[in-house]
Amino acid sequence: MKKLLSLFSIGALLSLLVVACSNSDSRLLIKINQPKIGVAISNLNDPFLSEVKTAISDEARGNLKVDIVDCQDSQPIQNDNIDQFLSKKYDVIAINLVDRTAASHLIERAKEENVPVIFFNNKPEGTDLQKYDKAYYVGTLPEQSASLEGELVVDYFKAHHEADKNKDGIIQYVMLSGTPKEQDTELRTKFSVDAIENWGLKVQKIAEDTAMWNRKKAETKMTSILSTHDNKIEAVIANNDDMALGAIDALKAKGYFNGTKSIPVVGIDGTGEALQAIKAGTLLGTVLNDGKSQGKAISQLAISLVKKKIPSQDNMDFEMTDGKYIWIPFKKITIDNLDEAE
Image (cartoon, rainbow, N blue to C red; front, side):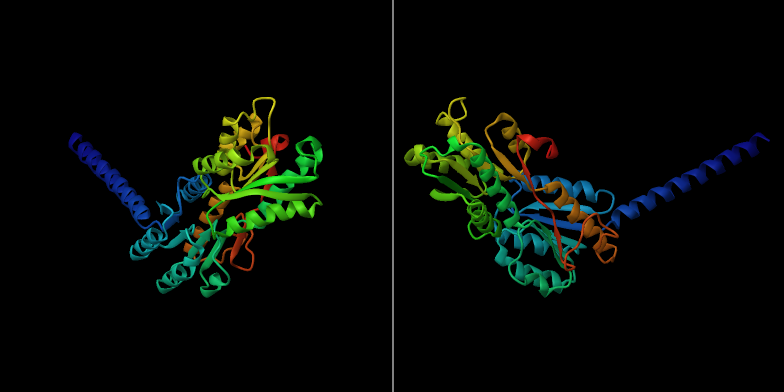
């Protein structure tokens, strides 16, 4: 009887081991066969793009294996990264373009390999997306963000007539712009000023310079501008929050925001540091560029594509436009509605 019980126990143990190994092998197989998305981001030092990166990974968890690379603001590096993703048979590729003019080539490469490609946060030029039925775009309408940024300036000057320091009825402003020839740079620069004028206010550009979306470069540029135009400047408009914060750094060094001397500075993105600056009273406002929603939309779109589903609100939390685009809306953020961005 003891021998029979021992044999039974050994048999039961072996059965459990077989089941455990079978389950383990099954989980391993699922992990090995998990679809892969390759994500090529222009510059991961950018706070907003870093937020998008995190959101992509968070939303993809359990559905996609995510491989994210930093292209270091180099289009040749980005091209090489895409070639590597394609050679490794990735199921979907997502690209934050360094140079919009490179989109056509990258679309052709993806089409050759029959791999869906999702561009985000820097829209391909013209009709490039129409060249491939599996090419998509997730992003925002730059003119919308810029118009809202301009409205932040309008709201301030309508409420603070003393901001017109020389009492000439004209807003003398400085423009800090992003990378030249980028869509966001061109449209944010143009439409922010257009919005101010459309509200019936007059403007005069004191100075404009590119700071390449970078805080330190913006501080350097603003320091130089202040050396010759300090007393003439009545507002600073920056294409993004990082450059707005750089301008604030330069203004602080000149004695601004010390309780007696201030100036309205506005940006776009709604980064964590920008929200803190609004709370501190140094940044007038920003336009929330919802990086979390962008990243979430990219992953949900990719998951739909690898499952061979037609992307729609039936399988995503986002609406598709023309079967190609997911547009994420913007929102003005000031001290009055700061909680909506935090």
